[in-house]
Amino acid sequence: MGPQGAGKGTQAARLADTFEIVAISTGDIFRANIKGETELGKLAQEYTNKGELVPDSVTNDMVRDRLSQDDVKSGFILDGYPRNAAQVTELDAILRDLGWELDGVIELTADRGELLARLAKRAELEGREDDTEDAIARRLDIYGEQTAPLTAAYGERNLLVQVDGIGEVEEVTERIVKSLAAQLG
Ligand code: ADP
Image (spheres, rainbow, N blue to C red):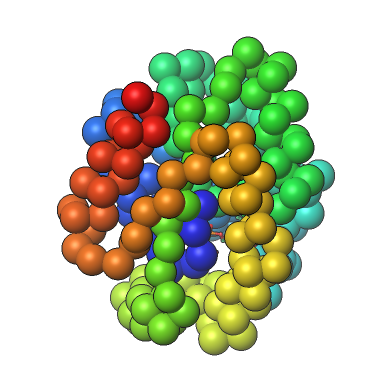
């Protein structure tokens, strides 16, 4: 977990390499569907362009379907899910149905100034359609209102690993791996 621009996607890919597991990004799945002009993509685009969350009914089914595939059997890292309380409940149900448990929940932190600077750079480099000023502001607001509070619940379950997301990419990965090792014991 972490706000937009904290480096979730970058770190998820690196952790997937390190631990030889798959990284599953709901944002990436939506973007692939938007690009492929699928029905799911057309629906998702109405929300992603504005920085709003795609409805839970759609997102939850998509995650359940993805987690039911064979390549996640040796482990996975979720990036961008869960993002609200209903998704936490659904993820618990999905994992229960599949007979798995979460090992840890990583929260990447960064201050708003750093986030906005990184996102402005990403908008310039990648030209993502949802990296407009309005959509970014909306995503950061939703993160603060709906997603950030979820970390407390994971903290109570002793799953939360908080990591400072400021610094070189390699440095942050090292911090995560070390903190995770301490968490997993
Ligand atoms: P960012 O972290 O920069 O917001 P993402 O790639 O994680 O980018 O997500 C892009 C968009 O995809 C979000 O703004 C939202 O519309 C949609 N999305 C991604 N994950 C979820 C989710 N768990 N629930 C609902 N919508 C989601």
